[in-house]
Length: 297
Image 1 (cartoon, rainbow, N blue to C red):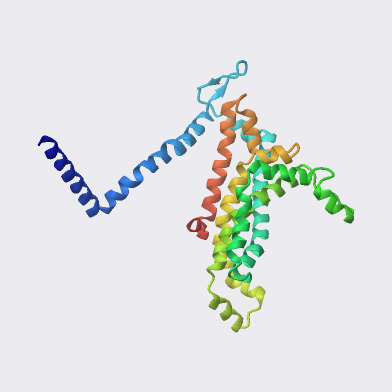
Image 2 (cartoon, rainbow, N blue to C red; image 1 turned 180 degrees about the horizontal axis):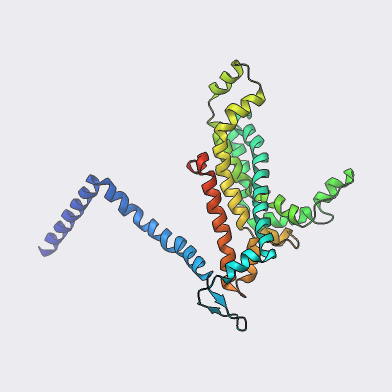
């Protein structure tokens, strides 16, 4: 008897709670998002906060132990040491170069897959574009190392023209990163071109606009937010990468390499270096916010 009463009371409580959540959608949404938002705040934003705080600590020059004494010496060294400035500028330049190359290559590829190819072939082409993402990151980078090595495929293809491959260095790093992140640029552009209304192109042609004018006045303004959205991935992934440059970059140093090399010897300096990509990416997101790119992510 007591068990039945307890069960009935539990069912009534569940019904009342369900009715309350049904009548109050905001409360239901709040309860639904509390756990993931808490996870995001504690683990992601919390780790960034710890990174930023530890950048103000120092390191004992004799024992290499972290001394939790507040100081701006790390950031002062970051802005005044020529090597650090060169590495930061080089890293940003590599990220911008990779983004520009991805955009130049992705647009014609996406235009073909979205507007030129037969409709039945378009899903297969999209799958072909996504296929490299299924392969291991290291496998792809080491494959490019074999291609760019002396006597490799690049040398073999360019030798008849009296040329040679780029070898290992900054050009090889840019080329490899472009290959790695190209699908992230193709997909948003493909989606934008696929959704482009045909009547706009027909109207432009009826008004006497040539292909170049149609591209500048009709296609590009509508696709530009998707290009900016793809650039968020290509820029941020290239800026934070440090493995590719170690494999194909030769003696080239980027921010990631300096962070990796200072983690064990000078953790606060590594944290200060690690804040640079975060700040640069935040500024980059603020710069492209007006293009509507963030709505296409």
